[in-house]
Image (tube, rainbow, N blue to C red; front, side):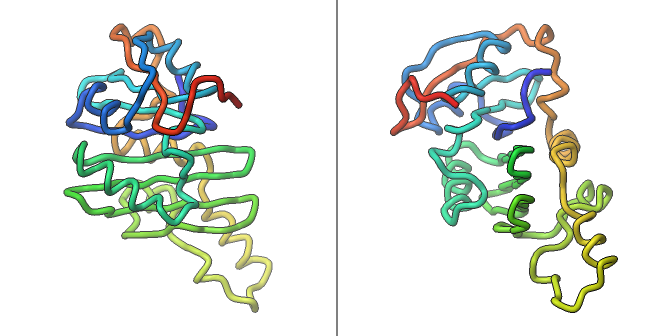
Length: 207
């Protein structure tokens, strides 16, 4: 397995690794192979590579969004701003520890779909746009907190929880929208990528 679980990433179709690294403002750059870069980005910084034809991926467990994730109010603005430089892009994030699962896409400059669920708290801090076909097929991303009623029965609560996403759902949505990085075999990627640090982040911070 390359990466995907317990991390976040961008998928960009029409931009190369250098363009994506520039849009993210990455500094202290180094050229590294796919396996090394993937491992590094789990600890610090961001790894940008083009592992399959047509898609560039930028992966970072803690640094990808400059300290912001889909739970923060400026996340949508960050996505739109990044898309002004890169064109259409997608975001995915998942972490089983806090049960954080998120996905979003920007098309033609508009944030057409975004959903985020935090299982630890039961919150859905982000829900924009209409569910896509794969979400409907999986039965996730269809409901939010606004549907919850105090008079629900246990069966109704169970049905609501069953409609909440898992990390496997995030992978299946990624595979349908673009590419699932967890399915990429390390040995199949022969072109090196770029590892670096976004503004305000210095080498040495690890998790």
